Length: 303
Ligand SMILES: [Zn+2]
Image (cartoon, rainbow, N blue to C red; front, side, top):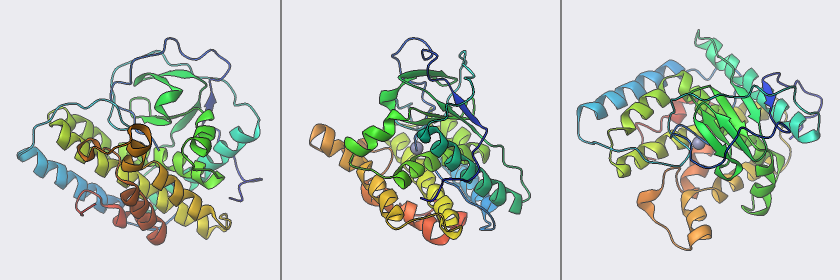
């Protein structure tokens, strides 16, 4: 990705070197969503998506599935408080510059998309942490991976994750990393459009199986939003040979089935909550190809 020399976001907060946020442990209260996208203009369909999603949830609400909260995963919404460090000015190492630049690119894209719909995009903050962090969603450690906390509208990222992504998950490359950031930003967009709040509210009354199903749709939409962002990035001429493959490979490597096979040697489809490798690739590609939010309706289409 040709990111050098481009604008860097000033929405990055650096808590590294402050000793983290306190104790480890616990999981987040259930509001974290890992991995997200970016775009620039046109594309339309944001309001359409909102209506479709609201409809979908309304229908679900009237019928059928009760559920329970499921823990873990990159998903739900969160509530609850927590003293959160604001962090200081970001360090100036290359990784920080890269993250700040990708975040800025997502800002440009989503500002454009929201504007085209007559809406105002509220840019999220991105918190860099090392080891552990305290968010409005609770404590998190690096082990839980990057996540988005709806409670404070921040993306949390331990950049050491990128090393893990490359070595442990076999997903190297700067555009694989950009995809991760864009996926988390995608969750922020879902938060702004009301999808996340609705999901978090509904999952409380759902069975775990139903919550997992719903979680997958939320996650795959974030992948699609990441793809839409990629579409605009490509249009700006920022992509290099192999970048798309890096993102698709990352989507493949972090698919639920691939992850489970790697970690436990077998697959439990009922527990999938992000989507299979194939699904994640497919939805990223759908957004990337079209650049349209209307192609990201994972709630009213088979996934
Ligand atoms: Zn996610």
